[in-house]
Image (cartoon, rainbow, N blue to C red):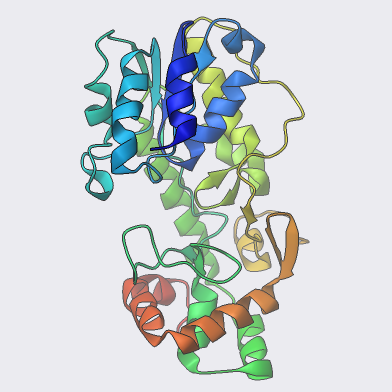
Length: 306
């Protein structure tokens, strides 16, 4: 059982809040702790992300949630990863009837339509070199062609997504996020267009600017001043995927963007990332086959089939 989790349960005495959800929950917690209005009224308990919780941690997680005065939660389905960590399952352990505020799991593909997960090795996705859990439809397309070396580079540079399909994808992704927000207390979809290419760093890693909207609205629901402290380092920038020129053009954004990925602060050119992925697919042909099968529709929709 996590020592940090036990220490956290022992130290919580003043009125406190919990934030429950995926990797975004940790960032929201830190933004709330950095907000003078919120931090002046509530402590914010540390909890692991729902994707990180182990069975032996669950009793302490429940104990922390039981004592919370405010629960800020994303929708998580019952039985996620085979554990009773769904939002309603977790809230069932609070005997204090806390104030519950619900915010969305932010997932937006408009800026990064080629980023996907591949589930060849489990529910959380199959990791890849450099980019972690993220696969790239363009790299899958090149790998499917069998091209290597300079030929692979030429193929990648020639791949341009269908403009109308890219634009429609962005609209549909934004509409889907807005739909999922309808029953929640916090809504952020209206901010995405205004933030442009800095709204999200990957499909599921929002920028501080977008996450601050969550923290501000949570504080507002509690009658508190909600502006987080300015100048905080980006919280979910472990992987920054480039917004490619064809996507920028389709969405009417400036097209002078970089072709570099940034991973833990280190830049990696698009071509070098592709070569790392191609090598992995060659060594693991089943992963490529699953990638092709899972994402055949998207490959066709964006015009990436060789």
